[in-house]
Image (cartoon, rainbow, N blue to C red; front, side, top):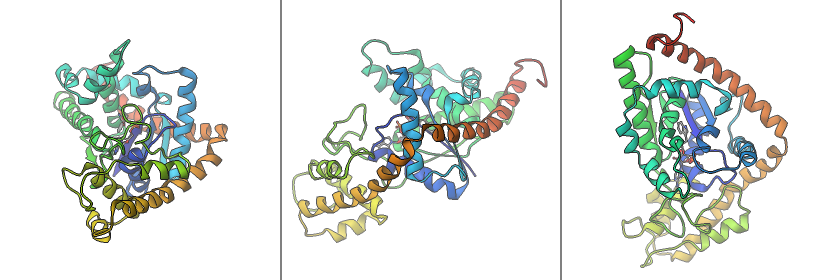
Amino acid sequence: MRIFSGIQPTGRKHLGNYIGAIRQYVEGQDRGEAIYCIVDLHAISVPYEPVELRDHVYDTAAILLAAGLDPDRCILFRQSDVREHTELTWLLSAVTSHGDLNRMTQFKEKSARQRELASAALFFYPVLQVADVLAYRAGDVPVGEDQRQHVELMREIARRFNERFGELLVEPEVRVPEVGARIMDLQEPTAKMSTTGGSEQGTVLVLDEPDVVRKKVMSAVTDSGSDVVRAPDKPGISNLIEILSVVRGVGTQEVEREFAGSGYGDFKRAVADAVVHYVAPVRERYAGLRGDEAGLERTLAAGAERARAIASATVAEVREAMGIGASGS
Ligand code: AMP
Ligand code: TRP
């Protein structure tokens, strides 16, 4: 089984990214051939600083390695190093419906947030994401809930391509975790945790110091009542139950059973302790890795070389099937 996922370059990865996605990337290394990409080309679809972008790629690479990605057991690379992604984006745009792109929830949300320029790149963002995955004919895409619609688009485009040009591409399956696919902001538990839309205090960063993590969890908004149970009218407590369940590796019902009868205070203390222990080792390993930019660059370059070998073979077949370039070139 070939696994592919992509992640935006930023040093501000949060608990939602970790629980929803990064945890699954690490597990993917035991399940199959795992390929992970830091998507710097996606990052230019919103305003950004060129110098920071380069740094953020290293930040993200160091976080992923600190979280347990092992370059001997996966391919980790920077998207822009494998130019086949951009070429395939254009080729696949020929079988992409404009209406489908217009319906993408993330496009609607992100374009509404832009004050100066809602770029065409933001509109084309999903096509690049489709190309990322289809270039590797990956069968499995581990992501958080917010990416489900983009993976459905991959299936649609692969299907349309195969019908028109022959069975060449693979329709990938989405892999969303059963618990923790949508971690909510601790201050506004009806909104997903996010570094762009969420609250500072409600977003636990993987690189936050332990006392900061503790403070953020202890000041999480809870709901009326005092029972530690999951319920639609208890978004704050439900979110903390999901977080503790994942972090401890036990079921949500087990968490509810353990805290039946105890108050919110004790429960939040337990969540805070568990989250501190969960992210602290990543922060510690990160510090050692991030300092060695030359080493990170070598890891990314070696990953890109392996990735390119796969992607270039797919793009060559796609060009041939679509009548692009001289035959057999
Ligand atoms: P990004 O940082 O936007 O590239 O997201 C990286 C991964 O984290 C994607 O697979 C997202 O679906 C996932 N993700 C982002 N926010 C959350 C969240 N609040 N809960 C769970 N997963 C998330
Ligand atoms: N758009 C994804 C996000 O914001 C990142 C991404 C880019 C991705 N390419 C991908 C995810 C390919 C899965 C597969 O999180």
